[in-house]
Length: 129
Ligand code: ZN
Image 1 (cartoon, rainbow, N blue to C red):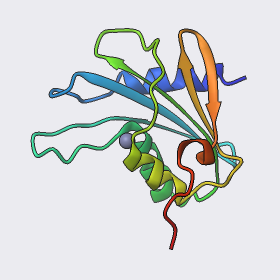
Image 2: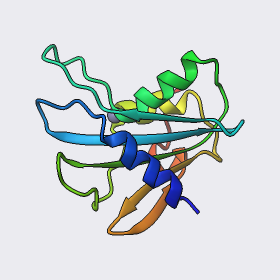
Image 3: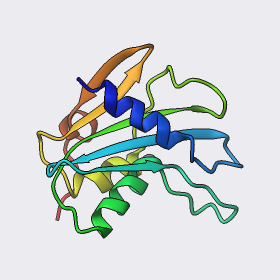
Image 4: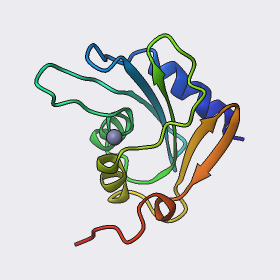
């Protein structure tokens, strides 16, 4: 069911800019209206890097999207297949929690098996105003 999302995240991963970590991540964000936003991680020498997940969200949010259904995330060292699950960092979890509800699905792949999580799985008792 989520295989296409994973494949699109892998496509997005090809655009990662990671001269410092060489760890390339791709994300495929689906909005409730059916639109899709891809993102990759982008590093720079000032260390103000942005993760693939937040790249996808920022692209969608700046287009006016506010309702989201899922995000697929893949990551691995440059030139390697993403076979080990790549989970969102703490910063991304908190950032994403602003914009999603309990039905939003995080999709990752681990050795060919697709795993899903909710925001409550990833960030229980999260900060809210
Ligand atoms: Zn992150």
